[in-house]
Length: 111
Length: 115
Image (cartoon, rainbow over all chains, first blue to last red; front, side, top):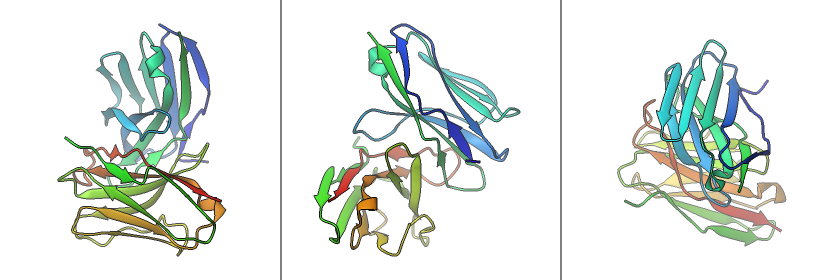
């Protein structure tokens, strides 16, 4: 079993839809959770960073962590064609500097 | 301010040649990571530098891979006797430290193609 699982997609949605992207993880020691957005031929760009269970909101983006289920989500409200990218989750625990990345979910928002 | 800078952005070379990839981290960032990203795969950790400490080389796939970081700033990843399976995007990231509250910031990567 991989330490982090992420559906690769692709996920296609119409403009204005609410998008839900998810990752599951296996190690309950993981405490820090990140979402990165990666446009084609670009490096990953940090979107959200959280270490606690619950929700964190930033504009149209909401990161949700459920440590009891080992499940993290990224919600995008009012999705735009410019949101079309690959979204990577990343996880680490407090005892290491290593990050474990999901394989990424490709999202396409149709105009 | 400037982000993480990587060069070259693209590199095409013949099997068996050596290649050198460069990473210039964000100024003041003491931690530097190299990753490899292959199609359909997650980011594969290669090596980690933190200040003057010995690097963590545990992710390097073979002894053909090496990396150094001079003066705590610029880093170079070298692949000797390249093989076709080395074709991938090589990403560099830096952070202010290795603390848990210090997320990584990535460069745009070097796209390496081995013919």
